[in-house]
Amino acid sequence: MLLYSGRVLKIVTKDIYVKKQDFQTPYSYCGIAAPGSAENDSVWKITRILVAANGTITTAVATNVKWTDRYTAIYT
Figure 1: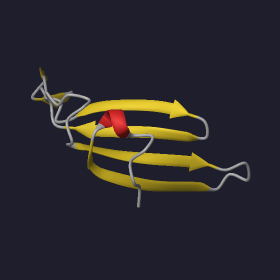
Figure 2: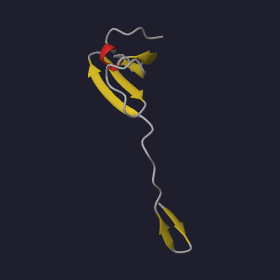
Figure 3: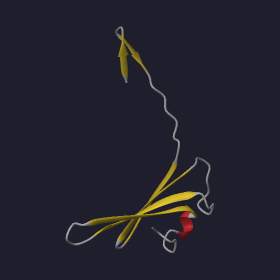
Figure 4: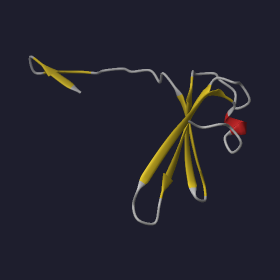
């Protein structure tokens, strides 16, 4: 919200990504794609996050993959 000369202006933003999140022990998968993308389109950027028992966090990314292939995609 912005205030300008005593008036409240509304800021309108559009979602620029479709977002998905999934937790499958021991990984958390966070995916983004363009609006309107289907889960089986090879357009997703998926970040795989691993939090180790000692608190160390490791991330890896797979790009241009299907959300439905998140468990088997190759992450770098």
